[in-house]
Image (tube, rainbow, N blue to C red; front, side, top):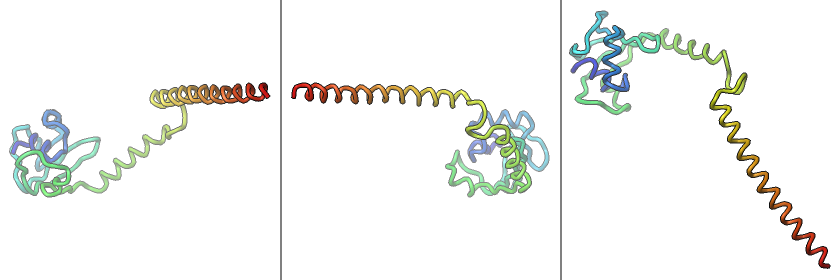
Length: 147
């Protein structure tokens, strides 16, 4: 099976065209040699993939016939990525959260829209409640005046 099709079928990339673009950018290699999209993948190959600033390594256990479900991926590949790479990814994600924690600082566009929706809904419900409140008092006042 071609390497671009293989990476797509094991769900490493969302589309086959994205997989072939990454291969063209020399981000995929087999046995430390850069490959082309047409390179055939065999069982036992170790594929090195650079994605999200992390060097992933996967070992091919079995070649799937077509795109497989996410639960079946572990039957076809084994992840042999260094633990240091995952720790590096975790540190990067934590450093991005450092700049602005949720709820702190200037609101994002989405936060602003949520606040506007909340205020609009709150105002509409308040007017409805006040109308009901004053409507009931007017009826009660009229009955008291009749007595």
